[in-house]
Image 1: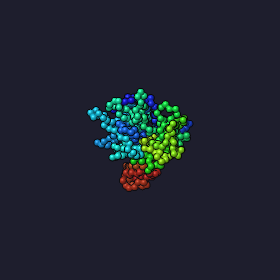
Image 2: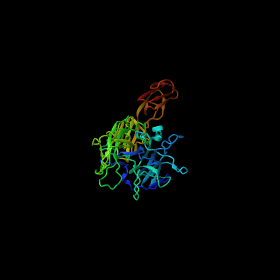
Image 3: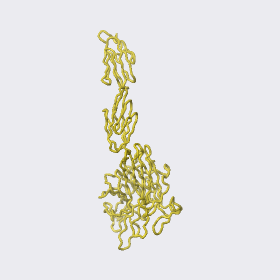
Image 4: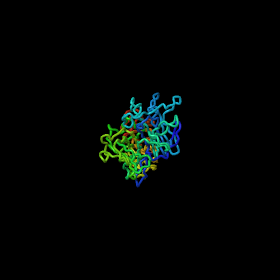
Length: 517
């Protein structure tokens, strides 16, 4: 299983016994429930080099997706002219038949016959899961013996595996997967790659049981099983202590948000542990739920993202010599006792961005907005949740004393109907304006004309009394023109003075008198 800095051999694919699950599932609609729409899945983590020797790279294998499904890869240069934020710089995406590899690799110096970058063995530096990079640990980063990696995807991988990359002893200048510190006996096959034991969460978003209710967001992590080995007694996997923190936030979460100091990252200073401690260990005698930690809750009102941070620590307690089962001091493994809590393995920050398909109408002015399916009859504001992909036709209806001015948001134009397709949270505005009457009184011989014309085909051009209807806020300019031999003697009512023109702004039903003599 060798690989170079420019190309990997597609090896180790059959060694799935240690693979870590990474999937985000959408549950089909049942009855009238609405399926929440997943609009992004960012995840990043600190990984600690506990291999016992320096390493020269890292790989994320993400199955079931294409390169175009990866929207972000952590690393690279963040500030122009400054160095990369992690020692291996920007990860590269390498497609293969079943998915993609994302790889961070040291260059090889052929003149010096060595890799130019390496991660030392962990020196015990503690991080919160998002700090092992230049801006997180600053001067402590080079010697800390940890790295920070992460990706964001739009399509959920069916499986994810993390692997350290080390020099290939049989191929100078090439890298291979870390398989342990002991060489196999002569004649025995090489051991399989050892995945980094930081489980990636499986997230299930279950639709609400009733229209308008919140979905249930379920995070699951599973302990990796032990490598296959011929043993008389079924073997437990290596145990690890896990602590879980959780936050819900109203905005979508980006990969860059899952970093130290960002308020969306749940830590001890902004969130109590959701799970204070859990011993996670693969159990070969359990069916269906072996070594699984489940955290679930209803999505809070107004929340659009759920963020969880998992801290993983080595279990330093006693194991059963035959089965490798952890034998905690407190017998139920409720929390680590003296000397049972080992070094941090790593910490995972994971988020899911959600939208529950809905349409919200905000209306101003007198009028109604209605829809036949879903049934809506909106006053100032109304919201309806629908199945993803639903087509909704809205109809704006103005009363006799108002006009419809037009749509905003997901609708546009001034037509009375608008049709939208709902795949997330859709917002529409509808504006109505009240109409008032401008009445013109007339005394003597003359004509009064006005601009602009009114609503409902009404206008001001009158040699005797007349009226027209105008939207509130409209400024109407009136002009008095006396007949031959007559004079204009002034305005009264909402206008005043002797000038032949007058401007009046409509705020209610309004009366103006034009006098001629």
